[in-house]
Each structure stands twice: as C-alpha cells, then as structure tokens.
Amino acid sequence: MSTHAAARRLALATASIYPDIQADDVHLAFTLEQLGLQPRVCVWNDPDVDWSQFDAVLIRTVWDYFQHYAAFRHWLNRLDELGVPTINDSQLIRWNSDKRYLLDLAARGVAIIPTKLASARELHDVLAAMPGLQVVVKPTVSGGAWHTLRGVVGDQAFDKAVTELPAELNYLVQPFVAEIVTDGEWSLLYFAGEFSHAVIKRPAAGDYRVQSEFGGSADPIVPSAATLAAADQALAAVADIGHGDHAYVRVDGVICEGRFLIMELELIEPFLHLGSHPQAAERLAQHVAERIDRTRPLADNAYTRAATS
Image (cartoon, rainbow, N blue to C red; front, top):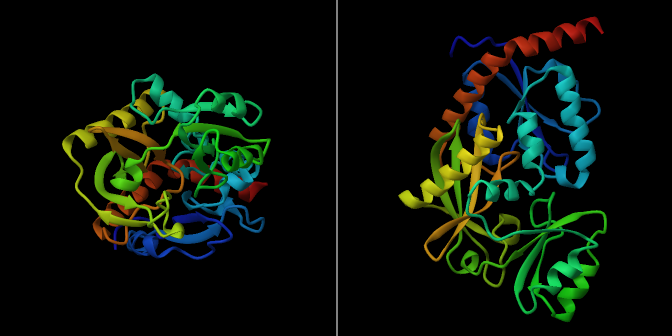
C-alpha cells in the first residue's frame, strides 16, 4: 500500500447502459485501490450522485454522451462549478467531443483522412461535388458508428439514407478508406504523453466497422517508427492548441500508401485495451493518483463549499 490518503475518492464515470465496471478496466480499478484511492463506478447523468464527494472524476465508459450532448456538457460545467477535476480535463473533453477538431489538426499540418464539414442542409451540395465516390458520412458528435453511413454518392439507396439523417446535426464527409477493410485500423495508446502499446483492429467479413459490437477484432501489434512519429505529431498539435496535459489518449489511424492518416484522437472514453496489458493499467493508475495529488487543493475546496452550502 502506498502512502496515498485512503480518503481520496475517485468516480469512474460510466453510462446507464454500462452501470458496472467493464472487464478491460478491472485491473485499473484494482491498482487504484492498491494506491490508496477509493474508485466508485458512477453513471454520469444519474441525478442521485453527489459529485462533490469525489476528489476527481475519471471519465471512462460514458459511451452514450453523444446521444445526450447538451446534458453532457451541462454535467461538465457542473463539475467545474464544484471544483471537481475531470481526467481528462473538462476543457480538453469539450474540444475532443466534436470531431471538427480534425480540421484544427489539419490546419497544423497533421495528416488526416480528407474531411469536409456540412450541416444536414448542406449535405446534398457537398456530396453532389463527389459523384461516384464511396464516402462515409458521420455526425461531428458521435460514437460507435451512430448515424454513420457508408455508400456511393449517386446510389439511390444511399442518397435516400442521407436525406433521413437527423436534421439538427452537423456531419463530416470523408472518402471511404479501403485499407480499413484490407489492412485494418490502428490504435496507439498513450498514457501521460508516453506511448504504451498498440493494436490493429479489423472489421468482420463484409463489414467496415471495427467496433466489437459489430464483430470487429483487435490484436496486439508493434508500430513502425514512422507510424509513431505521425501519432506524436498529432499529439504535438493538440498541445499547440492548448491541450497538452492528458492522462490518456488513443490515436486511431490507417496507413494509406505508406502514410499514417489520423482518423480520430480519442481523449474522452476510449477502450484502452488494458486487459491484455496489465502493466499499462498500472502505469495509468499511478498517473491518475499523481494527478489527484496535484489537484487535491481543488477537491478540498469542493468539500468546503459542499459542507457550507
């Protein structure tokens, strides 16, 4: 047992559809306990949770935040008002929650999958300029292939599906990258800014989605120096934007013609592939404990306000 104060309480934020700790995070939670913290799984939008009782909130499996986006942002605001720090930082989460951040990265020279932004009203005109091209259309705020379409521009069924997308959302339009199916999608995991491990994710036969709920698989892999350099460049751009201090990040990308293209940076609720990398879970737990040590005065202030309110 370390010398960390046992009173340090850490919320592991999750979604109502995943009310228990996920298997991939079990060793992380165990190690946090060994370090003297008291991790407790809490549903982020549960009105009965008193967030002021926690020293910090570790954002983990909030896998429905994009379906309740206004409420999610309100929750982050409330945590800020209480002085309860989030891991990752709430400002970083807000920035990363809208995939328009990809355009911020591209503006700083990061190689991304070519991306166009469009409101639902503008989608027709944007797609009309891409006749015959196989594309992917996804909301700027989304996850798990939610409201995501793949098809050929001009195909009747695809065009009809586009018109049925929610009108209140904004969308990214990207060319479909066949290498995701033929070669797989890369995920590089970083903790406290240091590369930890990587996996290659592949979709099930006949699909393009690599998520496990659609039959996708993930296997350990060692990235090349060039792939690591591309991921590092993306994270350097994030730091340049003003979000360099992150506890965890998953860099998702695909190699096209020998070049690693960024698909997404997952800084909110990524699956971290810790189950097969227990040492990575231990490193993350140690870093979380250290972050709480640094932010403890903020948490103490929160206790004071809660006690006097």
